[in-house]
Image (cartoon, rainbow, N blue to C red):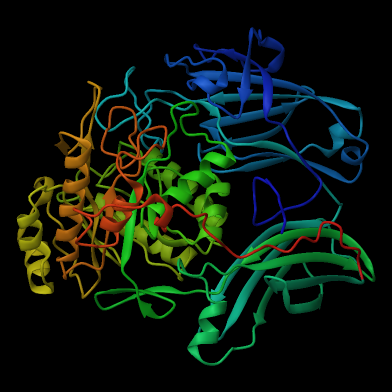
Length: 615
């Protein structure tokens, strides 16, 4: 088992170094400085936490148009050989990077990674100085910003801003010719995995790629391909186990999240030029009629809305915190998460892969419709899909939510064309997953008809979605939040229908300030209200799944199943029983010694090749 904390688990190397920790820091509220020589660094920040967060050591939530970072790095002898890459997981919003006063990278987009090759600076000196400027206009509503508030204090459903570096920064030493991009795909019909690989550097005679795959400790594949170009496309055939009992053991699903461990090596004769560790999975997702299908079989989605905020780190969490959220999602009885208005760190997706949690990935919204907003979101969304499409946990893409950024969908043809274009673009980039063009209502292009309905009257929910006929009538007649569910020009077929937001029951003890879509007066009432609501949802036979709002309290929103510190608001096993549709959960008592949700979750192991010698 590899015990790695690498920021990109799908492309791991041994030779990397985390640059988290203290950096020099300065605010530039006038956005006036243009070069590191002009900056007066006057404080210290803990990277990768945003200056708005308590964990950064600064905890300043005022408006700041630009911020600057600086760190001097002593390089090891290994880092001064070959090529040296400086990686940024995410910097919000527009980043400029200098090394020893020389510009090495620029990047726009607050949720996606970028890399600077700093080799020529590293070979000149044993020490380099890295300086980063992050420009992030807090009032700009034409950039993808998700739940980040544009007002001074968090209000309604928006939360504190995140400025600057908020994901890991790390150094990675690579050889002159190396693996630069790795993408996996799955073809269950042919029982094979697709491998797309791009090399950085030059292809020289005798260069080959060795690919090995393991299921736990068992070696499944050991292939070697001669390389003649920088692009590698291969289909790796796996042996079909035959009957379902054996096939299911190899397939990835929440019940059995089987990962196939991978080691890829660039070889020159018997010499290993570059080695990376990865993993893949064999699984399929699609829709057919009114069903969502996982691995070719109807699968009922039991999801929870996850905002991805923490009191101390805001949008940034430790690996242990990311893992704990995934564990709690499973322990609460859910099989999936709709990560809301946030592109989460790859480590969270890794834990979803490992523990078998399905994910709907959703692009953070802009809040204006302008040519600039369209260009920004479209470019960054393509980077999101490229970064994450190899994760088996992701089962749907959601480029837009609740008509945010397209407020005139019912009346403006260009807004509708934009939604259709994003839907088609996403299907082009990844035809293997369903796409929801605009989650919640006002559908013009979607593979799943999603509805946001916060009715707390359980009889009303049964009346609206109790059967397929009732649900189809609701799609035509009902207007949750005074919105049409579908717009003219869009003729829904027999797509699956899901409540992708509902519930939102608040339990607010101790005179806390906050709100929910309905409110329980006590812990017992909260437990019972949740049980009654979930019982009603399981009576809604016109639905193919649900997404409950929400996993945790988040600032002023007190409608979580967990408090902000991740403490359950009621007995965890009883909540899980309600999530699973157990109608006795309202009265059930649980013996902690018999609680099936109190034991650690098990998952497939990953082969440890760290000490392996090349053949």
